[in-house]
Image (cartoon, rainbow, N blue to C red; front, side, top):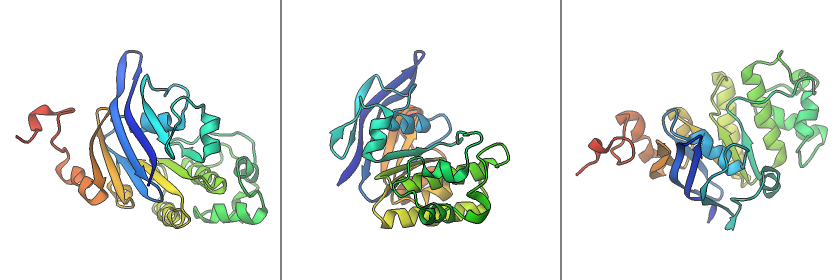
Length: 242
């Protein structure tokens, strides 16, 4: 069953085409990756799915659980169960980590907040009462933001470059978290250009120059990393196989 479908989405910023009729299909209960080179439009696509200002498409449709959400504001999409962790987490200067985790939590109990931090390999005793400020590294902020999404119990969790700015141990914890979330019924959309992150996905969509080039099992999409370019008519028409 399709949880998320993107149909012929087009988005331009200052007369520059960013998304050029992109399509996406994400099955419920799966881990799906959107993969491609830097500048391919992956983050813009994630922002458009979340309905963020500055990422509102000029045409096309976004369907969630079969309902058209293209015109819904961000907070309405969040209520439907869509959450996004940015590549560069926002700072909420001065707020305690426990308060940040509790903002959108379905269960605000101490036990649940501690479990959320543990799920991203952070010691609750060290982090719950710390402030979310410049004293935290980028990797720590990234993990705390992912933990906050865990507390929301979303239907769709979008992670933009989950390996950005974090160490090997933390990345391993996030990979474990992906498997746990999937077992609990959460669908995960990974936005990445990393082969290692792609390997955690069941299926994937290859994006280039604002278009979907291929979609299918992640093992097939992994060919992008070995060949560096998949023959297509989007960006390199001379490479199209005759």
